[in-house]
Length: 458
Image (cartoon, rainbow, N blue to C red; front, side):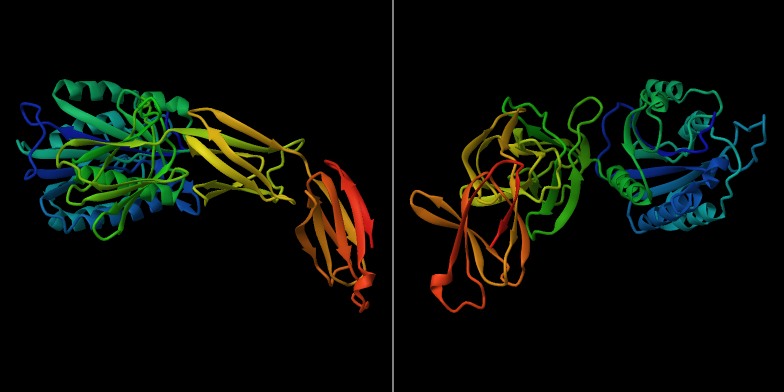
């Protein structure tokens, strides 16, 4: 049964080994077979356009970007595009190699023209298209062959893509697939678990990013995993952004969100071995590694020590995140983050100084963050004063250790002003703007408790 109301893009990276199963050398060809969905459901709406319109647009851009690459051959197979589907009848043999392999600079225009002329009609024979695609690749002992298959539905012909994948593996054809899903019920993903890994494309922009990511992996067999290690030196930290820079000129090259795959291992990315990299891991505080070199044609591992715990800042009796209160997180007298109250944030394991921007400010020194633990810190709920006064200068003070501690200047032009302050004893100094005598200074002392609202008239 085909899913007409859902869309996902199944991207299969299929690495064909040489006879002895060893990886190809750097001079071998890269051959990419695009398998494009021409089934009827591609006519359905997706955002502000149709699925077929968006898929055509992004595929054409992708194909066009390959035309100047040396040593790259491309081909196109389509399915569901020849026989119109009718109730109770579908053509499960509707899959065809439309453009055989040729150099990208010659073949790109033929593939683009085929994609442009596509009219979605039929069903979704995924397993059969994958099975037939093996014969689309002419014999080659020194080629790296990739299949990129796009579909907006699950297998519709009661065949088993998993069985096809197993058969290909038995022929020493190695599969490394990516499934990119939009609104896909995860129960349907079991159909592809035997094939590989899943990514999510929720809209046109995310599809564009993922397609670019997969093409980069197809063109580059130098892979990297970044291990974000905890205090036990295990690569179990994740969900932070990583920025890769050219170490020589500082140019930003890649930005990725670190991810643990479905096997809970750091996910693999492709990097160009020509660069020496600077890696910035955007933890709080950041971790920076420079002078990183990767070995061409190999799987490289970059280790970084990023043990993390969490800090949960709370206001007693309040769960609202929109309090307007923030906390300065400091280390070595430098501010590394502004933390919103009533929220939890991850930090590297260590000690931090905190300054909460209440009135008066509340400071904590050497708050410890422990591995994989939440440090809770709660401050009293504020009280609210409403000051009613004539026009004139007024200031709020706290008396501490025999000294007047200035906290806040009220707007001298305003006659009514509200202010949230911490529980305690305070005083306000005020003088009417019409008065020309210092002796007319008014001092108003008061005490306020958590959650209390008081009016002060001057």
